[in-house]
Image 1 (cartoon, rainbow, N blue to C red):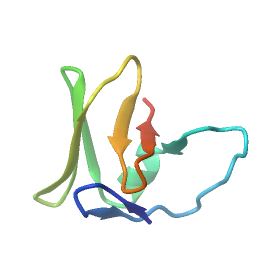
Image 2 (spheres, helix red, strand yellow):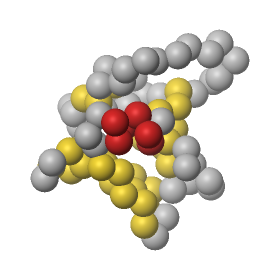
Image 3 (cartoon, rainbow, N blue to C red):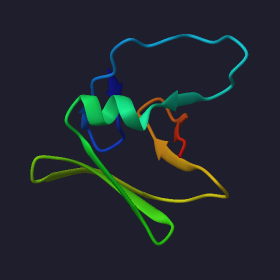
Length: 78
C-alpha cells in the first residue's frame, strides 16, 4: 500500500523489489487493473477512483512524480 501525502492510499499488488532502482515505479496498467482512472493532459495528470480525485500532479521532464508519505517520489512512467 502506498500512502500519499494527502492521506489517500493506493493499494499496489504484485510488487517487485529491484535493488538497483533509486526510486519506486508504479505501473499505469496496474492502476487500471485496480479500477483507478489515470488522465494525462497538458503536462499534468490526475488519478481518480469513481468520482473522487485521489491525486493530481505535474510532469517533470519526461516523468510524472507523486509525493508520497515518506517524502520519496513515486514515479509514474508513460
